[in-house]
Image (cartoon, rainbow, N blue to C red; front, side):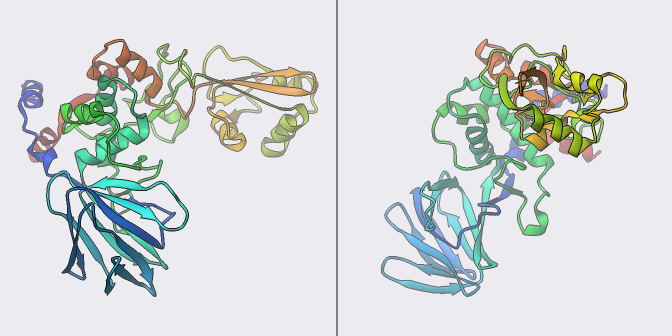
Length: 390
């Protein structure tokens, strides 16, 4: 009976809860500017210093904002408004967006929807985007997936992005915002404006997230290309998650990041194994095994002589040598060692290029998500609230 009610709510639930969600995103995280120039690219904004309205900004107005002696100095081309402890920039109409241009030589401007808070910190500016979650999702999808994929894939990425954001929204709480704009949260460099299908994909999945059998938001992990085999969560990270199970995946093996190759000297490879892992490179059998390794599928540990004595985590090798993935073979050619690898990234969860391929073949977004995540449900946010309130 509970399952029937659950399914009914998935189909009928309102999107009201999703429409009221606002996220606080720290822009320029760890590369904060000292000074920026702002200009509205769509709509107009009211600018408040210490709670008092200073001026309005539209597409014909430019303001220069800088950290001056621990306060925020605000100037237009003709006027200095003063110095403030906090600056709030609030949109006057729905759909407004603001353009930010650094003055320190970084040429590419950034453009984001909705509201902003700017605070002084350590001689620089902390810029926080208070953004409607679906505007944020669309911006992340464009930053993470580009603008040339089919709409069905953008629906896949929208659900993943929304789930990930809400599941990690306290990550930067101590810094005064919820998420940042870098890879370890999600890449968020612009509002979505390059392909209307990104916005359509976001809107057609509005409020939809991924939950496990206990109605908890999942860790919606994904990587660029799994190389033909995804990984269990515990193979890469510390914990077992039922919905992140390894599987064979032939959807990505012909895609751009499915194959890589790097070469180093034999002495460098053996020296690395010896110095970092105390591998017995002087033993002829162990050395031969370390120079000639060809797995039939993705392995978790490097144990070339199969004796269980000299196991090395492939993840460690990948990070030490800055490789594209932890799935590769080893071949010795004269005085060189060739590492031939498959995939790009950690390999846990959804394979982006595999999912893109599936979307191009007309497979619906929900089937793609169920293919990569085991025993999950796609639900509206209001469904989660309903069950948690019982």
